Amino acid sequence: MAFSTFSGGIHPPENKGPSEGKAFSNLSVPQLCYIPLQQHVGKPAKPIVEEGETVREGQLIGLADGYISANVHASVPGKVVKIAEHPTVYSKRGMCVLIEAQGAFSTSGKPLESIKWESMSGLELLNRVAEAGVVGLGGAAFPTQVKLHPPRNRQIDTLIVNGSECEPYLTVDDMLMRTFPGEIVEGIRIVMKILGISKALIGVEKNKPHAIASLKKKIAELAPPENIGVAALKTKYPQGAEKQLIYSLTRREVPSGGLPMDTATVVQNVGTIFAVREAVALGKPLFERYITVTGPLVKNPGNYKVRLGSLIADVIEECGGLVAEPAKIIMGGPMCGVALDGMDVPVVKGTSGILVLGHADVRPMDYLPCIRCGRCVAVCPAGLVPNEMANAIEKGRLDLVEPSRPFDCIMCGSCSYVCPSRRPLSHFIKLAQEKLRRRQKE
Ligand code: SF4
Ligand code: SF4
Image (cartoon, rainbow, N blue to C red; front, top):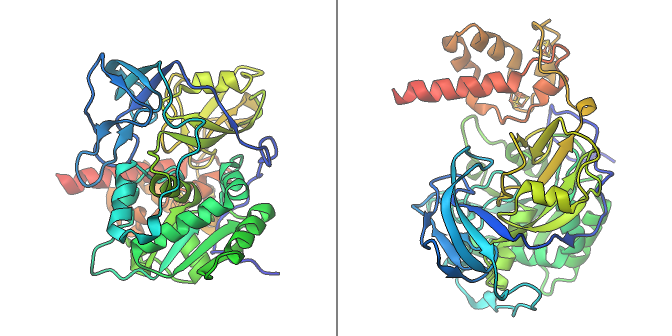
């Protein structure tokens, strides 16, 4: 049987074994929470609490500052002990609200009453998503209310749900789909209502048969039936990248420099859909999330529910600690994740996983000249010529990079992965993008 896919891409070792199929367990509530006001793309939220103030669990503590921003909520009840700079995944000096946990939990461990959202308007539902501070949980952390509110002149006909989880090691989305298929289907119906559309397609890599079966079962139980399809996709990286996923599911191509809305689609990750459902149907702000903690050095790898603002060091400690000195700690997966300088950074909304690698799993930093083997060109899902762009930027020839469409690069890292000379091609291209942006501003 042929499975839907896109051209190019790679199939690195999946390495999902250590956490695959492991049921979610709750990590302890941190005694001291470091909640960054910037956990999303856009402007940081503005703090609306003061040092010494007592806050409830889920209370709004940071107000979205402008259109592309997101609300931030207290992950624990307690006292605001400080509002100060602290390292985060996005900045060495990110502004954080430090809350010392104390007092009663208003939502945890209590059944939340389900809200009858079906009678609400799309705009009311959208406002609930914005109030709850939902952002893209696949890692991008783009404010969800913005994505779900395309300009009036753009027609959307299909919601694309990303359940592919093509990053090696990570298993959190797989477990979300297996554990909460009914909640995800409800979240999809909410998003369809917000967008005013009647069609959704969920793309899941075929290496997640339990997730596919669970979703199909829940969709079949819907009465009246809804036009929600589940497609098994080829297991290939970067199957979950927006443009590649849209093409795999609809055969529509996002034009160069374009956006998913140019193909009449909106793409949402399954984790985001789950958070939308919690925001709308339970009135619950986004102050905790599910993540995978894994890697050869983690003693008890698995899938966990964790409060935003918990320090990575505490999370790892609760997962049994490490069996050896780590060579690299990554927030997210090995392909698209961000390497951390240390473990004193907090879990944020975009943290899909924590991956700890040993020296044997990390390739050397040094690289060799290009031997023009063409492998990077063959795997590039965006149809680019990475070696030529990298060679040009190395020589400082921005003029040669610009016509090669560097902004169509989706930073998947497939080119760097296959390069026999270990050239950091995506890093070079990112550098080119930054320089070109700077030049455009001047
Ligand atoms: S050039 Fe960009 S899109 Fe192409 S393989 Fe490299 S990182 Fe991915
Ligand atoms: S894969 Fe590496 S060595 Fe081969 S053409 Fe690309 S940059 Fe050059």
